[in-house]
Length: 244
Image (cartoon, rainbow, N blue to C red; front, side, top):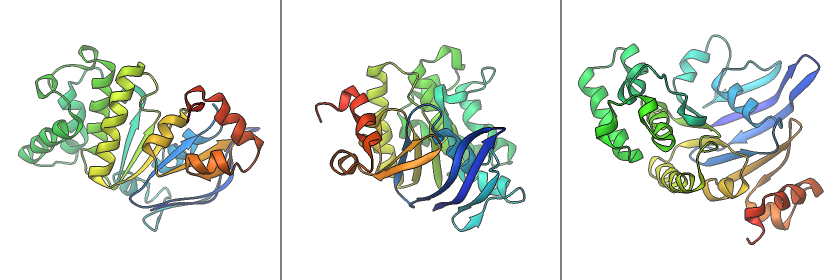
């Protein structure tokens, strides 16, 4: 589904992403994880076209991402950021329908889609006409997910979507996300700093450090066959995994 070939990104003297080759399989959930500044969010922003790499090639469904194709390819991608990234002056419903209305989709079709997405994400329909400040953090994240899914994208990109939530709300949303991923069968790329979350949600995990891929596989691969000492060190720092 998504292929990065020798993709590199620098900001002045800082290398955010070293030349990287990465294949993200179709219909699977891939988690990008690593310390702060390791390049995981940079990869996501390059895929969605918000950041242009200095070198290398990105292909989505075989189509190359470049300035000419970025807009059409971006519409095939659903993008979710922390706390939903909602427009505060728009209601939940208006946030979800914004792009559909911009593209001139029929009103009845758009509203049916909103109803279906509210059911899918378990968002209370009587809150659709509330503003973001009137919603809880978990509800705002559900609206962000609904907005990302509004145009029925083939790929869903999530940049630490649960990072700002308290543990109980986060646990509930993790369970809902896992069910949604299974039901939709989409390609998903998830950025997280929590290895337990990555192991719970993802089919494959990609661990990065200093802009480079260290190892990819399952949690069991990391535990039993670490590629280098840093892998074990990173796992040991994840206190929730000690008992696993």
